[in-house]
Length: 376
Image (cartoon, rainbow, N blue to C red):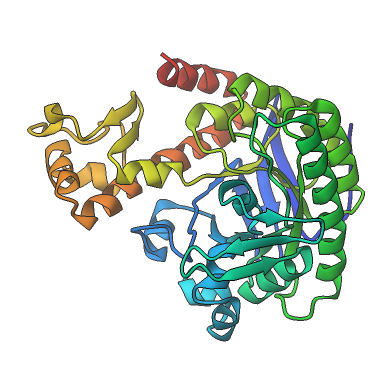
């Protein structure tokens, strides 16, 4: 189905290979290439890295977490300090999630009007509604904000999925209306809707139809990679993506493993986010062209090779496995930075390879190579 709509964000497609597509998302700030991976800076920073590191790595979009920033330092403080871009020293694109994933991860009290959390910092009670999530994200000032949604943990009962879809749709309408009238937000700030429904293809279709009818600037696909097998995730994506507009960004939320991303790109997804590359790096799980390397293994203690001889990142260019393992086992924070740089370089390079292979008509060969490396 070829949906077309007018939006503050649009996708300009340069080439396709099957359903996979490459081009750019055009925004009031400029543009960024897709497929894209977006590093996650939960509290306004990608842990152990700074904005200069991200620029050097070639990142284009960085995420920040609404729930955490509304608690520390507070959205009003971020706004007073110039919004997320000036606050973090990042000149690229930014995206804030709504706090909806915390509905899944922190198990707050959810009702038809919104969500009540206990602060992870001091235990105090905090409330988020679809309207307040929009207002807070307006103060944070990202280029893109997400609607507040309900992400059901899978497997979920049909009744739980029905509630998640209905509340997400209702909250999306309320968020859209509030965003249209919001004065304290950057000019041209986009609002993305989110499709829910678990792995129920009928509910996904309903959710997509109800969300697209509200005419958002882009579309997140939420509630996946939360416990379901990969084939179920991919089947759900295949049923959902044709129902979303062709000329707007399609964002698979919370997916960042190499195979999962490329399989989703093959179905038409444009962008991804995930904490996995940096979180795993801090624990010594290194992503390489040969698959995953467990750096903590004793066999690496006297290994003079780089993490990945095929890698061109600054970490691999200068330091050995032995040295990096030494830093890691001693808990030296330098290890977290150097290993995070490597893993992010791997993921961002993979997205660059995906873009090039789609343009060249060789995307299936890249998919097969990555699948063979990571699933054997």
